[in-house]
Length: 204
Image 1: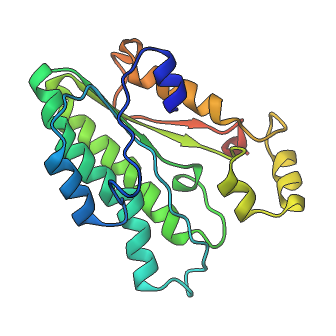
Image 2 (image 1 turned 90 degrees about the vertical axis):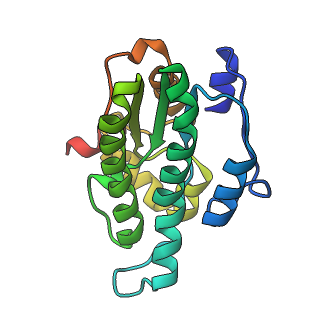
Image 3 (image 1 turned 60 degrees about the vertical axis):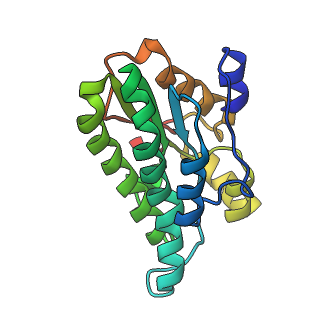
């Protein structure tokens, strides 16, 4: 996503985990307090997905999943939207997941957090729309990433590919293309939506 946006002329701010730890509300607040630059676009692209059945999820792990996937995007959106309001133009894109819409075992915490992110997207769209700020979410399906291959065996990957109408995992570049569109002036009348990029997986 960063490469795609940079290629289109965006000047990026991509804080490292040492600069802003999304697992820590205090760290996010500290970064926001020190950041002074104007902002046109915010992409909330972070994920924490510790697989566990509903009876195995500890309160600490559930809270950590909500913090990274839901609370940090809320903190950043609320903080950086103030810069966008001054210009009366802005774009916020939240990276959600197909697991906010359909279910699979051992993803209760992640599914709850990402479903919450979809709801947050709609709420922010209503709240920030009068200031010319569009808020949308992208819900990727199975994308060929380190996290996907960590959470699925090679045999499971093959089975997943067979279950996708397009017959393959998605590419990170394909998700980046959708994000770039939502960050652009081309998406001027699109807000409050969760756009699914999954090769048709959720159609079955």
